[in-house]
Length: 283
Ligand code: GLU
Image (tube, rainbow, N blue to C red):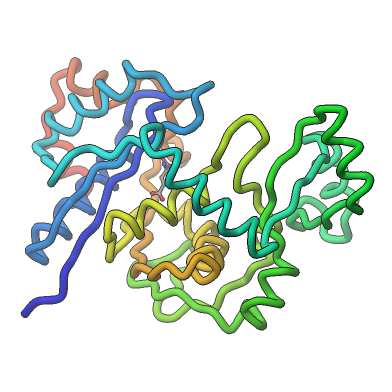
């Protein structure tokens, strides 16, 4: 029997899709078809300040125009907050996260003055209990951060973990990639007022949806390192990764949601067909 193959396209409805998204979605769709597997659609809409329902509707319309259909219902992260809260509760129970009261400005300053400048990822420590209680009583905002120190106590040297990469990361790395926890630092997993942040939601969902292959742009290659640590801490299976190249425009810059003229919608209006796009992208 063939091994199961489940992949997904997971856009955030914070703007209209562009060529780069089309490339990613088509890669994942074609890989699923070639393997006789499943292609899932997940809407990553936990950031309520930036996500808008009209962008989700536009995503569905653009995917249909590209001729891509997905298996099963669309999973909307905003409808599954309890799943992420349960994962956070597990990490809290096991002492793997801590409340961080540093403001964004303080974090930026700490990173700028670190020996390696902005390259250094942020790491901190839990506050002494009395100090934390004082701040909580004052209702100060905080973020839940993953404690790499605690993760290391639990799992041993984190660089003994690895993830399997079948695509090409930015440096063209493939094979078993050793985890470099320093790339992410003590990442934020939730905030006092927002129950979950990207890294936690993505690993929980990939596991819950039975994703075997994560196919996405190589801008997320580095994020995989901390996501692998989270999978190990939560006892979740690690999918295989295929990070693909990022498309660049004529100016050599990668496509971004701010480039209005390059959205799939604008291309469609200008008479470009999905076949034209496939040809241009070589898929
Ligand atoms: N929602 C993320 C994005 O739009 C993608 C997450 C992922 O593929 O893991 O960039």
